[in-house]
Image 1 (cartoon, rainbow, N blue to C red):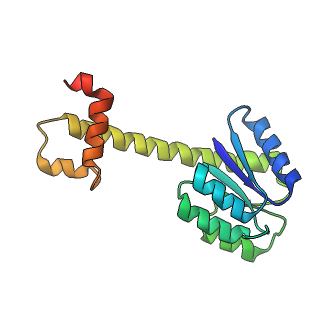
Image 2 (cartoon, rainbow, N blue to C red):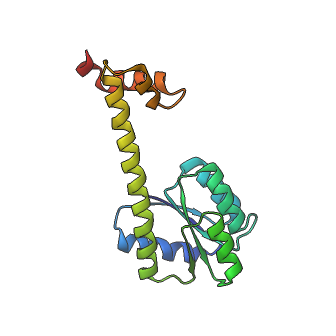
Length: 174
């Protein structure tokens, strides 16, 4: 799992990485950002699975960062990590799509709970995508399907999909 740790405090980033590593040894790749602008650059390039975002960071604050990450990497699951327990911050964060709002210092139990939720979301997305892929393959491979059934394929993706199927399982089709 790719995890973005965006916090202006280096020790917070290192502490989070250590706690997550204890929960999921050798399962995560970490990207660190000391400010919001760096976090956005990493999100754009790496498309992390999960992002822990501090509320108050230099250059771009956490709430703006959260909103922009959802624009540039919509699949990234964002979790706000803050030293501020103000309801207004939490409300805004959740409104902008944060999975959760954790107060610093987060405990290992809190991290475990939120990462369990995030992993479940990732698994559900993967399962849905896998089911869609199998449905597309079934439609493509069944030559006796009516034309209306091929409408299940995403608009503009049929040619790319056919090329992929032919490349991936072409020998079996022929």
